[in-house]
Length: 83
Image 1 (cartoon, rainbow, N blue to C red):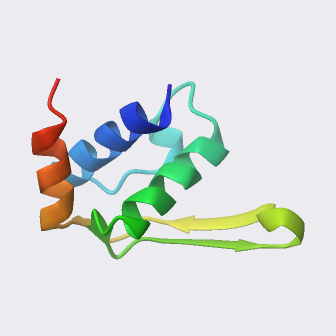
Image 2 (cartoon, helix red, strand yellow):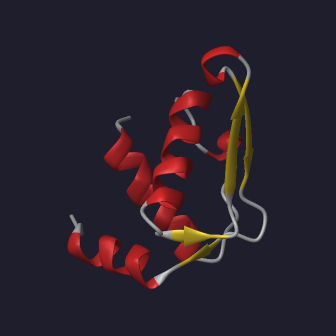
């Protein structure tokens, strides 16, 4: 699965009221999930989520999606990227 595909699934799940976790997505590497959450935060598509990287090269990652909510830009992204 690619970043854009997972981003759309992640945002749709958040829109549906879920608090997506890495384990919710089969055949998705943990690093890809963390990257997508970080993209969603950086693009202001969601609020109340966080990704913290530490260690050499950011190898240690803490990813929290408890209480995550979709924002208007996130809703707009989903609308603009319907399949």
